[in-house]
Length: 522
Image (tube, rainbow, N blue to C red; front, side):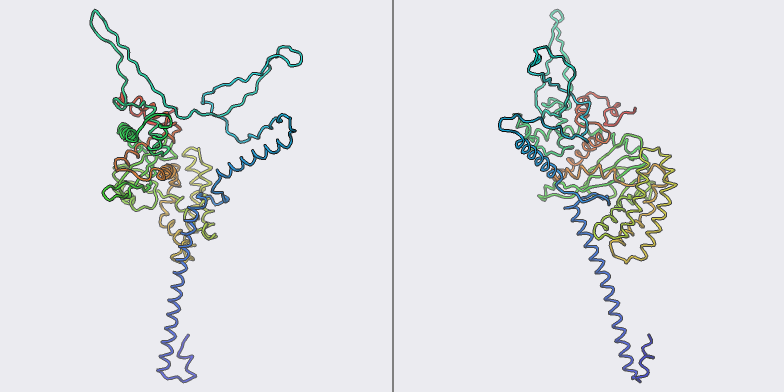
């Protein structure tokens, strides 16, 4: 609008015209400023709304990111127990109503057992034979003939039971030669120690796999009349940690022989005696490629900080492809011989949180497109690397290109500063690393395998609260590496550790690989 030409019919003075023009321009500037303020205010509100929805979901809601999953009750276990109790009470009342005052209870109908898992065949069976009160016919008195049997299996348990092993070494003498002969004493992982390998394994598995503090183990032993002080248990833990350290070091060596690795980290609290409080340390996790045919390996490394130098020290001269999140500490590796792989689950999570917060249709579209990529991966599970590479080339790469174009076009129409803009910017910023998995059949699509390995540690932190020292943290990392690797390989940790501690004192270092909790090749 030309303000001067509009005011010309009114013959205003030049001073008035100048004043009006300045006033109008000032108002327009105020409107622009106000519009900018409103935009950033809306963006801030959207960001806070997203954060609030995320925190509420983390505390009160389902943590699953599956968009199709319905709402679940937080107290599923309690609800199931209450339902079972109600069914039992109803059955009792129906039975009491149907019975006369002197009638025997009717035979209970068999419950529907559809869906119950069969009991493992490898479990020992203890048979209880229930014969009739008499083996003669109650009507004619003739002997009964066995024509079959009904078998019902029930699961039972013998709680942890302490007992004493007595090792007797007879001594034999030769009177003419005046010599003495006896069997050599058994080697023990703790010289002169009270505990057998089985008891030591029970302590280690309870502490590091079941996350039970030592004072709880002390109480369990006391209930059986056995005195196991916490100081004794702590002494065992320290000595066994040292004994198992060579296995952890060898496991790390084997891990670094892989050409594709996962890496992640989680904070833990470490006691800081000088200040009378705790400080933050980090447990770094490294996992072998879940798509490889080799036995899976997980190695934890405890460090006092989160700097990239700790990753560089652990990996040393390793070369290959590393799947990580956006943490800047990894970036120095990618300037060398290490190839960066980005986690598509992290990118998806940002759209998921946004959709959970406000039902954004654009976030839903992003989730749909990413879901198509995961559907291809699900269909390729168990396939050969070459087959997976073919599927990715023919189907995944075109979908990725379409997703990239959609993200770029959508970003142009989305205001800066909002949660949707940040979610899109994250994917665009990391796009080359996000899409790199589809270039062959060996790269993983996300970092979920190592996050799943860390999850038990996160649960355990609620029980043990903090590490007592850096040495304690590193000891825990070594033991948890072995136990988690055993779990991934389908090996029962208690049985493996008992056998390992029994063999370890006299086992040659040249055969240390035989002691590692790895699946043996078929």
